[in-house]
Length: 272
Image (cartoon, rainbow, N blue to C red; front, side, top):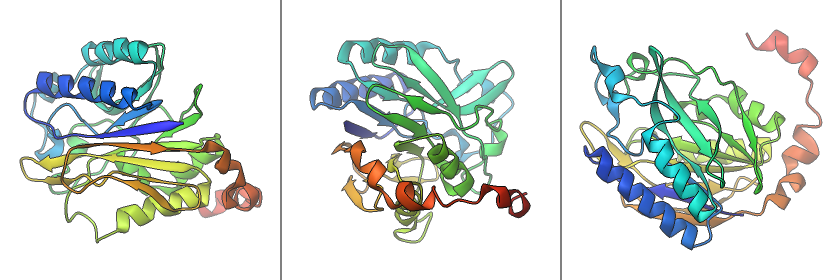
């Protein structure tokens, strides 16, 4: 299949950002993209740069809701799967959520970020409730898709759970800033995850200078050998298009060796 990672800057004008995102989907679909993924909170500023105020729930939206309605219509029009990431309101709780919209416009399901961090410019615990959607893997016409939202990618347990459920490709909507990690480390992390678990990883990052962070861009795709096969530019808006051959998944070291030779009967004693 062909995938597209939409690396776009976000302004304070949500309506403008959504229109730009809709246009990007059309461009990606015209280039043959079967699955199109956006970065974390792609259509708003990155709210957790500052601690949440009392009325923070007013910033969130329901799913289904106005944004998913627009992209559902477009998914049906262009015949592509679309992975969004939104600040979701559900009752009196809020989540960092990625809805996945099928090519027929129906929402296949929601993945909510499970692990929530809190440190300077990433005050996420004041906004997000820890996710309750477990580790879903979505069976689609194009392949089995998992989603790991930003901070969840740091947890090998989460990434392995997606492999055990049959994921062939894992999309990572991210908000990664310039200088946040030593050079190459976040790429190395996704290369290792792809190699150890026998799937593709496709990380879609925010880009552009905002309130107290400059997001790096540099979205990329890794194959199950742990090799980077496509990379977007640093600091620039871009639609990264990449051909993905899922037939290579079953030939990976993870599928042939690592997953086969697991000893799950022992692991309960090791991991608490």
